[in-house]
Each structure stands twice: as C-alpha cells, then as structure tokens.
Amino acid sequence: MIKTSPTPSTASPAGEDGGAPMLLSVNVGLPRSVRWNGTTVYTGIHKTPVTGPRTVRRLNVDGDGQGDPDGHGGEQRAVLVYQQGSYDHWSAFLGRDDLTPGSFGENFTVSGLPDDEVCIGDRYRIGTAEFEVTQPRVTCFRVGMRLGVPELPALLVSHGRPGFYLRVVTEGEVSAGDLVLKTRTGHHQLSVAAVDALLYLPGRNAETLRKVVEVTALSPGWRRSFRDLLDGDLATATVAGTTAVDTEPAWAGFRPMTVTRIVQETRTVSSYHLEDHGRERARPAQPGQYLTLRLLDDPDQAPLIRNYSVSAQEGAGRYRITVRRDDHGRAGRFLHDHVEVGDTVDVAAPRGAFVLRPGTSPLLLASAGVGVTPLIAMLRELVGSGRPRPVWWVHVARGRSEHVFATEAERLLEHLPGSRAVIFYTRPGPARPGRGAMTTHQGRPDVDRLGRLGIPSSASAYLCGPPAFVADVAGALRALGIEPGRIRSELFSTLPSLAPGTPDGAPVPPHQPVETGAGPLVTFARSGLSARWRQRDQSLLELAEACAVPARWSCRTGVCHTCATPVISGAASYRPTPLEPPPTGQTLLCCARPTEDMVVDL
Image 1 (cartoon, rainbow, N blue to C red):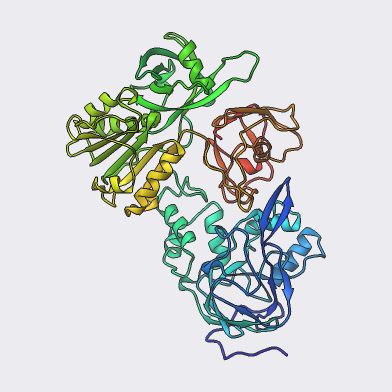
Image 2: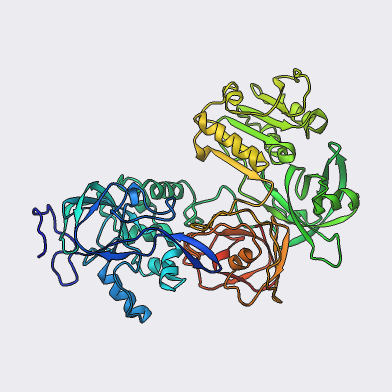
C-alpha cells in the first residue's frame, strides 16, 4: 500500500502517467574496488534496490557510501535522484533492456520529476523526510564505466538528462512507493537541466548567470564556478572559467632565436638572453609566463623539450631566461656546457596562466632557489609600470653566493616605497641587515615567521619553487587568513595528478609504454618524455597514463575540461567531439588524438 503524506503546498512535476511522482526504488551500495582500464577504481557507483523503509540522514542513506568524497556525497550531495523517464529514454537510445534501478548510480529512482521541470531550491517531502534540490549530477567517468558506455557523461549533459542531488532538510524514513510531494519552489525557478547547460555548454547568458548565483540553495562549488564565469569574459569562457591571459600563442610551434648574451648569475645558474628576429610579430610575455625550448643534445634521440620562466622581457622579441645547471638535468647541462653566444635555439611562444594580475591589492612574492625567475619579472613590471603596489618579497636560498638576482631584487625594491623583503638562508651563517628594508634570517619561512611580517589578509600571493616549498608556504598563508583563491603558484616540475577514485600508490617516473607505437611522436614537455602514438589508445590521456605521465582528469569525455592542457606544437582531432571546445592553444587530453607530431605541456 502506498503511503500518503500531508497535502503539499504546490503540485509536484507529474509522474509518467500524469499522477503524482513517486519513489519507485531506494538503491544503496558501499564503495568497493573495481578493475577498469588496467587500474583499480574505488567507487560506490554500484547501487542495488533495497526493500522496506530506509533512514536518510544528513550525509547519506543508511547502507550507502561514496568512494570519492571529494566529488560525491557530503551534505550538499547526500542523495542522487534519477528518473524512470530518463531510463526509458536511454533504453531506447542505447538499445538496452538491462537498465534496472540503481544502474545510473542513483539512490532514488522516481517517476516524474524531469530535469527540465525540477528547479534548484525546490523542496520535496518523501516519507517522513524532507529534501532540497542542490545541483545537477557531477559529470564523472564512473557512470560510463558502470554501464560500459564511456561517452555517457557527455550524453547526460547533451541530452539534458543529468539527474540531480538532494540535501536532507529533515532526516526521516523513506520507502519505495512513497509519494513525492513538493513543499517549496526554488528561487528564480531555474531548472536542473538549465543550470547544467549553463555550466557545461557554450552560449552562456549573463542575466541567467546573475540569477543563478543568487540561488542560495545551489551548492557552494557550483555557485563559485558561476561567479568565476561572471567575473570574466563570457565570449571566451569555458566550463573551466575564464583565464587571466590570452591562451592563443603569439606564434605556432617553434621558431629560431639567437643567444645574444650569457650572464653567470651564480656558480650553477646562468641567464640566456634570446632575440627573436621575427619580433615584429611577437607578443610580449606577461610577467610570470615561460618559454619552451627545443634542444637537440643527441642526434640519435628525440629533442629535449623544456620550459623556462621568462625572468625579463627586454623589448619586443627579446627575452631573458634563467637556467640552473643540475647534474641530473640533461637540458640544463646542455645549455650550460654547449650553448654559446651566437647560437640558435628553437623557442615556442610565451605561455602560462601564472601571471601578475592587475589590481591595487598588496602583493606577496615568495620564491625558493631559481624559482625567483618568474617573480623577478613581476617585480620588474611593478617598477616599470609606474603603478607600484605594497610588496612583501620573500626568498629562500642556500646562502648569499647562491642567491639568484640578489642585487637586482635589492635595486628594484628601492623603487617600491614601503616594500618589505626578507631573505632566508638555509646554510648556517650570521644574519645581516640588507639594503633598505631587506633583512636575512637563517632557516625557512613558517607560519610564525610569515605572521611577523604583517602580511595583510587582503594580499594576493604568488609562489614559485619546489613542490614542498610551495605547499608549506601556501599552508602557512591559509593559516594566516589569506583565502586560497588569492594564493597562486607555479611549480618547477610536472603538475600533481588528479585521477578520481584511483589509488595514489608509490610515484612511478615517466617511462616508455610497455607496448610502443609507430604513430605521431607525442612529447610530454614537463615530464621530459617522448612516445609514439599507439593505435590501441583512445586518447592522449590514455597514452599519458601508459607512460606514467601525471595527468588531471574527471569525466574523460570532454565535458568538464579538467584535462585541458596547452599545446606547444602540433595538432589533434577529437573523438568524441567535446561539448565545448577548449580555449585556443589548448587541447582536451581525454578525447584528443594526434594527427601529427605534438608537444603538450604535461
């Protein structure tokens, strides 16, 4: 017998037969390890129906769980809902007769409640519990993995049938057969399908964006994404938001530049002044960007591809890069040992989103070792622009003899009234007063030492150095009250991987795949590895995974743009075609296939 509930305040979106919508099935499942694509995924996507009443609590349905709490579950995503109408749609579209409740990973299978009628902020009473609609389903590869349809995350968006999450307003019991009764209508009445399309599809409407950020029931992450879109240029925005820089490179591929000057900065660090003879076509590098060099140190091997931050822009088409010689680094050794004034090197256009953004807020520029290179370019820009801002300059070096740009930084800081500079030397030695406001200390910066500098919480921070330095300083700044969104960083090495639900394990250095290919040569610039495209691979992402190259991804079907990566040279086609193309100069690893030799910034 179907349970009844008090009369709702408004009518609910009707069930498939025109009657009141109903909870058809309650589905739960605990996370488990599943083998997929040669790896193990820890996931709670597998749900099965249960009989009898189930208690729904603030964070979950009893007996249910999520394998990736960063992407699923939590108060805003306690319950996932999918509709019988969408089951019917996919059964016909996919030619499947095996889709049973829980197949799409949902907790509640319902009649009615279509995505184009249910709105963010709508509230529903089911059994003795009450719920609020918070957001559309997260685009995640697991639903495609579960049903053996890899492109399904993209199809859910393009067909306007994502499903939605509920927040538990009042805990209680629910059972299959309960009526779904609407108790409140969401602010602005923006449907689940419309909000999903607003984030993931092109053609965004500014007025709708302004409305959606006012819907307090929308989960914080989605509201933040929409605010980011509003703050930028919608004409060039993608699902990943807007960028602070024009991602279209000043020129395609590589072009020759002449080494006009070499300056030894320290015993192990030298600066190389490069001149582009096609400089009339060159767009200046923004402070913080990098150049990519192609170096042929061994004719029998693939060229070395390395990124080096621009430490000075010396006029149109004239750049300074600063390189450390490392016994374990082939590119640095080659530059230091073999490249001379008058030589020519191949250089790709300036790239990178780690740039000094305009504004008047105070600045913290913190670096370690040769990580000072992009920050000295920012300091030069502050002095040269005639629009100085309050600056806190923090640098870590082993000692004065290995302190890159010590004199240059001191001279520049003298032109910034009120600036403060603190240098940390990690080798024992007496502290000494510096020029102007510069002082030195032994050791490393920590939360206590940074706190004594009086850095305001309104400061924008730019960090560059080894991963441990960046992580430690960023953590200290957050502890001091600086919002994470105001802390930007650049790393020397590959970016941290993001592979939802897969085990971290011990890091494996990038290597040639076990099975090699004969297709276009793909070079992963940050990883220092080149490998031939293999016909078995479905995407550049799969080749990167076969090479243990760290990559970032989520949907694996071109929806979320988590895998968007700068292309230094070459071209690719897409399969499947992404719902929204990435910014010019980038590619989506998860669905890109090289059509010629490529260099990607990975």
